[in-house]
Amino acid sequence: MIDGVKVKKLRVIPDERGRLMEILRVDDEMFQAFGQVYMTTAYPGVVKGWHYHKEQSDNMAVVRGMMKIVLYDSRKDSPTCGEVNQFFAGEHNPILVHIPPYVYHGFKCISAEEAIVVNVPDRVYRYDNPDEYRADPHENDIPYSWDRKDG
Image 1 (cartoon, rainbow, N blue to C red):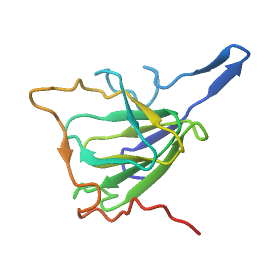
Image 2: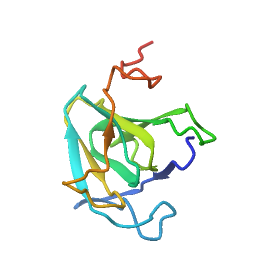
Image 3: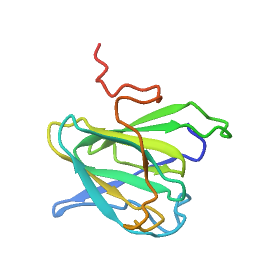
């Protein structure tokens, strides 16, 4: 596991009315601060990545569909520099993935329908000076291919 990354298995509580799933609580080990809550989506097969933040930590949970969330540690001073983590998150595996600063991350929708991610970063998005640094999803130095691995 990449240094600083944490994964929390989410508990879904269903009943005849529907279901409930807590995503992030102030007493969770990965909770640092509240910045904002937002959702983003991806259509089947779409890759959104790569990017990292210098200040912000992300806390991502997929609440509809399935996503492949991939992380890459490019931090030269990290004990896990060069490591890649891949998580299959969503309806079939409800987890929260905590992503620390300077760790590249992205995701790909792997379900047959649009997938929805809820993110609870510990900082608010600054429209005038975003803490977001991007790399091309396919042409970069990250040792990862978004292609499906059949076989």
